[in-house]
Amino acid sequence: MSLKFSQTYDFDMFNPEASIAEINRQILNREIKGRAARLAARDYGFDPQTDRVVLTNRRRTNRRKLATIHSDYLRLPWSVEFVGGVDVEALTAASREALRLLRRRAPVRSGKYLESTTMRLNGLPVRKLVKGNIDRESTIWISPLVPYSNTIELGFYRDYYETERIAGGIVRPIARALRKKFGKSVSIRFVFIPGPRGAGTMPGIEIAAKGTIPENDARPGLSNKRRRRR
Image 1 (cartoon, rainbow, N blue to C red):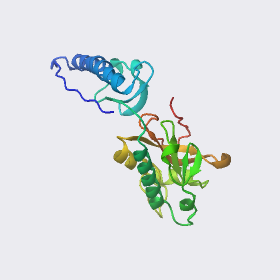
Image 2: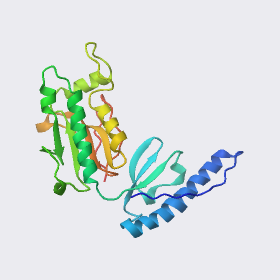
Image 3: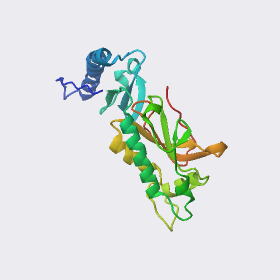
């Protein structure tokens, strides 16, 4: 859903920090928690006490309950997005593009990396996405499944290899490109995905309905496992 408002605010050039804090407070409380929340509740059944919005603030995007957002925490530029239902067409298009780009960037020395590239819906391998099987809680993973994929992702990310260069890693740049193209409709991030039969984690792309997962990419070399937010 898209809600836009226009409002004029006073700004004190001699006390800019206080002015910005007051503007943040008025926008959040009057426009976002006030007018926007009432319209979203009326037209989409949005509940500001329990439903979550997508908050972009301090260069991070998170899914938060609207009632828990306070103006003291906000730093310009920030935004709040009310998310509606799942855009199945956008999820499908983003997933197809992710597969295409990953296969194009995959190392081809042995061909095993390319052959292992797999799409999984809610953890199960699938060849294509079917509209009836996708809902707001669905998660799509696209990744290679060879055991060494994590190692070479880190190697290319840190520019270790002298014989071949793939700037920024193999998988991670794809997530950024997809987010730039499809980010208004779906949530996309680079993550480390559980491999088959306890084979460790693999670098992959996670795609889900807008606002259901954070959109902060993991960094190769870090062992933190980011889980889906509820």
